[in-house]
Amino acid sequence: MTGPEQQAQALAERLLQAHRALRETDLSADDKARAARRLVAISDASKHHVGRAAARLEAFLADLAAGRAAPE
Image (tube, rainbow, N blue to C red; front, side, top):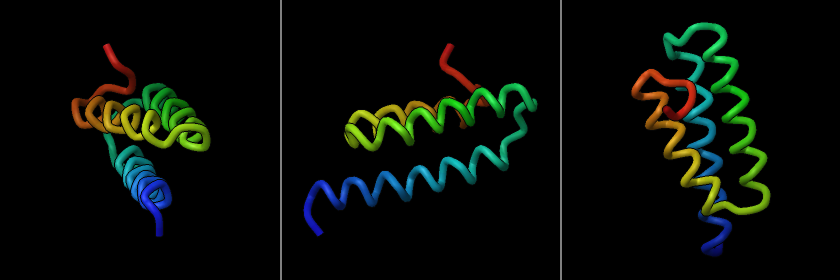
């Protein structure tokens, strides 16, 4: 597997973890829906630029860990 393929595979695994984490969070239904839309946008962005999508995913996970659906 080449470098870009490895990056894409690592991102795919992190996206799966993010989906699991979102399901397990205690956010309100509205906040979960907002976070889910954000996660879909990150997934979509990964088709075009893996590096940017990875950075956005890390920010998403940090927000989720802090109990936020979106950045403040």
